[in-house]
Length: 114
Ligand SMILES: [Zn+2]
Image (cartoon, rainbow, N blue to C red):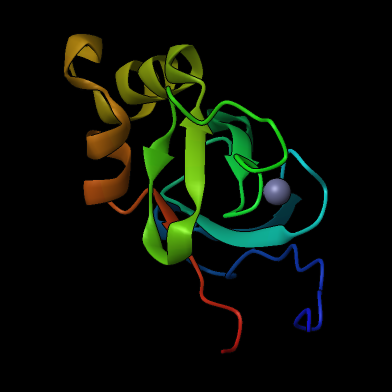
């Protein structure tokens, strides 16, 4: 039932400002993994935790997490996101929230085969 899981950490060479890092992160209940792309130099640690569609049934609180495609949820470390926004983007940290991160495609789920 589970798709083939690959831990795929690589960076596109040659373009440092638009570097993409792929990372497969186990969810809180450890029954699934989610592959994410991190763009533009955003630290991987900006995603604090990921929750699969089963995590809630398994007793994990997704209440403060942000829904994305496929019934998954992301929980962001907004302190890290704000530091990144200030240091790398020169953006007012008060503007940084999960919508900013996702709309700016700094973090994006890569659907791994359906
Ligand atoms: Zn889970």
